[in-house]
Image (cartoon, rainbow, N blue to C red):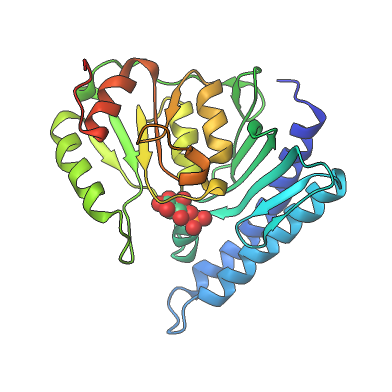
Length: 267
Ligand code: IPD
């Protein structure tokens, strides 16, 4: 796909941050056996990746605002546009030497995501989309959500709440309703990639609560541009502000949403 100048800037920035993270990931794998563990090292790798992204994106578009996981919010002189960035989504995987993590970059314009990039450097998979131009993987592969229509054949993904999260009871109830009806639930630990995988038709759907805008902003657009549906779990919530999300292929969305919302799909 021939992307816009902004998309090319995003892809270049994601690759550059990805190279830095891959280099540090080699060291993280070596640090696993030590008693101190790689915690401090990973925080520095994460910060360094955000610095690279800031440098690339803000240098290219100095007037845009910024929202990054590590450095927070900075308004731009153009109040209508901002970058929403997670330099390392899937930090726990990275910390434990598991090669499933991503760089996520979204561009918001007037409150709407208009471009999104999710880059998995360990697998060299670049997922990206622009509003109205479809969703893509690497150079030429057009992304489409899966065509499965039956819950019992479908695989879903979620994020399991950890560390005393208030979302644990709801998630356990979701599991009790969903597991008997489907072909499996995955918890791979990087929300941006969970959304990219829905867009690529690898899972039929994904849901999670307690997320941050930078985890999902890029992925939401990628799913929609691949023909999928994305909605908040509860009515009239704002996905990015409230951090709760349901995403699925069109055929499965109503049954899946009804199961998670504990509602009758026909009601
Ligand atoms: C986390 C991942 C994970 C999700 C957590 C997020 P981080 O993001 O996306 O899959 O379950 O809720 O916080 O902290 O690795 O950027």
